[in-house]
Length: 437
Ligand code: ASP
Image (tube, rainbow, N blue to C red; front, side, top):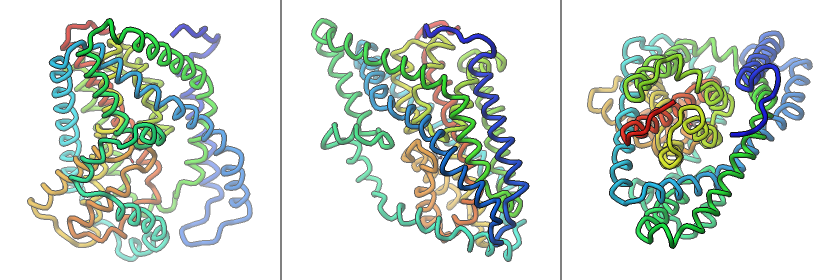
């Protein structure tokens, strides 16, 4: 992108600084003023929360909305142009099947790692039942909300039928559920490969222009990122239940440890093996992507940045990045799958239910499916987690135990959610004979 280079610190460095400053101030205020679990809030803390809610959160929301604003046009243009640019339905089939293989393979691996970690460290058995009851009481209302959302969830077949929108304009109206739009863009792109280049050239040119415009707007938005990220992180950390974090410490350590391990070891290895990128090169190119995913907690909001990273930082062809990323942002969530595996087994342990191998396989299958179905928005997987809990006979109300710390876990799981998409597109680019930068 040819936006002028700002003088001084580079943008990724400034975004990182925003993250560090927001986190430091938020955590400091939380440590100094947040009341212990169950105690009333002090006047000072109420005032801090008010400032965070009324003045800082709107800044973060503005940044998020600017990111979301371009999601629908970018999904449509990049998928349509991606598929049309592939040139043939055969190539689409080849890329599509490899993409699905990657999604299923890495998502399953992530759940297995989560399950093994909980079986090894047994965080649920280390939790005092009295403490568990106390934490659960505090967050029961929030858990009920997720359970109610889960009750509205569709069955497997209904979900497949729902993939096809009856009204594509309405489907494009909700940028949190972009699957319908994805299906429409995929089909239209496939049809374009059959009509031939001449008949679709004008449309492609127009969509290219729309895409370029959105990328330009994204470039402006990212200039606000240092401030937006600082605001989002500040709000999240001020509100973070630090006392709860201590109480569910073992769960938190296992979930976060698993996610950090998955990102730093598994994804780094995948990047090396499948995309031929050294860790240094990979993470240098990913800096902005990592901070955006972490601070927004949303694969969808990060989607334009994910495409931009693949194309601008690593030199992947736009048609491949444009094909893989929109699918990945909605369907490929490795971090979410690992988190689901850890959470279900942890809550089963707290409940005193020993899940046998058959039930663990059920958790594996359900976690993979629900990670595919979860919306790429903050907390998008929580209602689906309630469904998995019910399926294995664990009361979904126990979700209350992990909600107090979920924001931080959500931010962390969103990172491997998007980096897995990135590596997948780089792998496919290489396989199709494109040299990466
Ligand atoms: N926040 C996650 C994402 O957008 C979804 C989730 O696990 O709740 O990727």
